[in-house]
Image 1 (cartoon, one colour):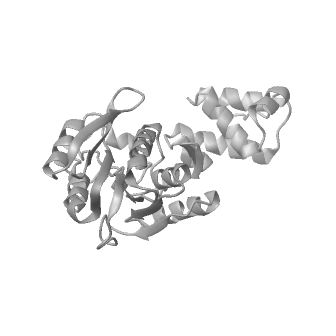
Image 2: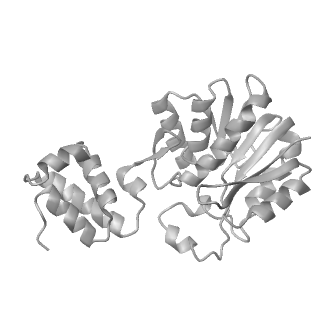
Image 3: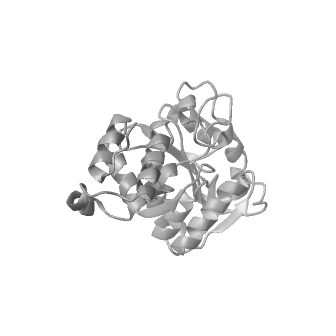
Length: 275
């Protein structure tokens, strides 16, 4: 196929590959360093061969189903720009529901609340809370050294101090208590038909196998040791898992068990409070 040699031509080519115009423009802006307004004025000018090659390759990656965030290497989350790689899940707007709920809990948890983010991935939740609540002491753990390296890099670039730890859930937190426990753990059931469509993201961060609830069971088994009196546990979960997660929270002797809806109206997060 003869490749276009102008920005206008490349954007048209991208649409033929199935990319929507916003995604194609985002790729062009990222690769060129020029914003959309600049390209409106210069869209018919010949492009350097290197930029054409890079754009062509990026479009092929995206049309093959690779998330846009991996192609450009970054994703916006709760006002922060995070770098992402295939070692971590792409932060999603649904998870901002969890951060927003956590921020409403923090005023009642003392002047310097201790927060732990279990399964931090890119560090999105931990960094958003540290950014919005500077007096908090934030600890974040992940079982993946590769994911933790991404999170540490994001924290360093953003100048947000977080205590990063390599750990399988509570293993590296013996004897520590927290005022707020937050987690977006793997929760997709192993037979979920949507799982193959997420093949580019790390499988271990998507599903624990079985019914998808094992991570919640494991985390809640440690609540008695790690959650301070009056503290909260807040989880993200699948759109249809609120009743099951609420049951697990109640069985863990938590009170005020409730859920929060995402922007689409789905019950996306559930949590409970220590008596």
